Image (cartoon, rainbow over all chains, first blue to last red; front, side, top):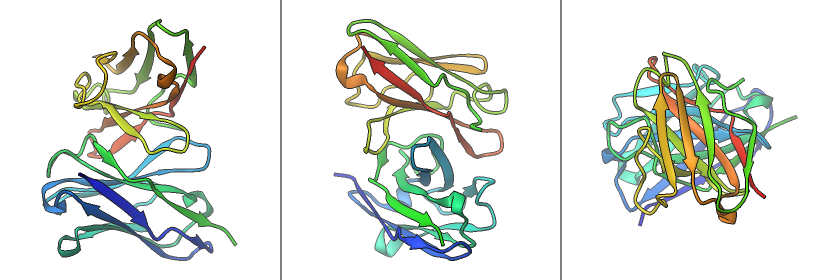
Length: 121
Length: 110
């Protein structure tokens, strides 16, 4: 059974940094693309970043490019999102999700329950 | 402002059919057959309902169907049931190798 468990979301001050984790089980990250999608309180879904199963392809939304970095640790089967220079508008529930294949980046078939990041002074 | 445009809300009575549109451009929806649809109930994670315009993942009811014409994709739900009441989001791969979501549509089953 596929499981995705996000963690790391906390209250952080503007300008601060945070690393989110997404522990995967039931499959290997090496064989699947992964993505981060966020949802601000009461708002819609916003794509943040994705990484291919090979790790060779990484892309970011314009709103986070240069501030966020996606990575993974195959040995721990865990996906990460390093978030720097955080802003109030980064406040959201952050979901990780799994793609159906290592190079398929256009849809995601399993989702975690999310971890809440709040950026406020 | 979302890259893909969806109606804010739609409604229908049990047993009826409804359609939710998702309008993009030739740089996203119109570029590939890479539109997907997600259902999200309050307080829950999104669930994939349709991928690659009209394909249903295993376990998704055949009451859900998808189509596309040019830069507009559509999700149709037939035989509406109370449990279909949720938010629905379209998503499309883009020519800049990114993903775009629609703003979401709240479906109310009357």
